[in-house]
Image: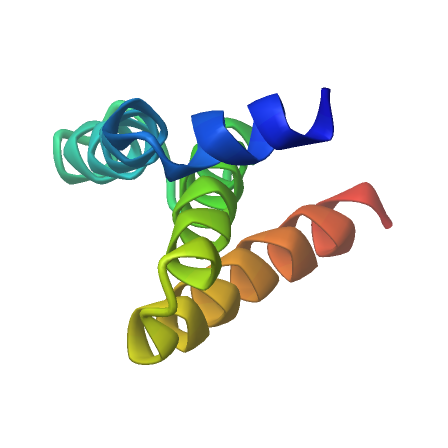
Length: 84
């Protein structure tokens, strides 16, 4: 079961889904449909960067991994700030 999850995380499908989430958030924000501090925007960014961080880790892309962890942390901290 764990091996299947790791195999799936290695797939291009996960990378494309993460990319779609991030680009959707960016597109909607630049069109004034979402605000950059909205929970939906931050959720899309956290989800997308989290998926891409996992993928980067699994394929040993360390610079990309660090970048995605930073984006993920920024989005999660933004979500936590909204909840207070």
